[in-house]
Image (cartoon, rainbow, N blue to C red; front, side, top):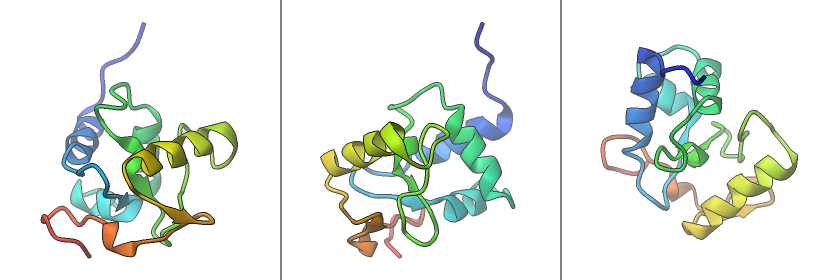
Length: 112
């Protein structure tokens, strides 16, 4: 039996729905937006996301603009899946670093 998302998880998922296709947000910016002091807590909420891909957790990257993790993993098939999803949206990485920093979203409709 699956559990219902917590109020915190619901805030994280609602925020993620605002990230447009072809844009990314950092774990830190997402944590600040949902008024949480822990990027790890946001990461755990993303790991438990039952609504993917409608809630696009693949659009969240690390603050140093590297790809970060996906599905609780920081390497392997899960990370390759994240990179494929982002590439399909036009988001490119050079190595594991975001190639176009202008794609970072800031929740005010503007890019950083």
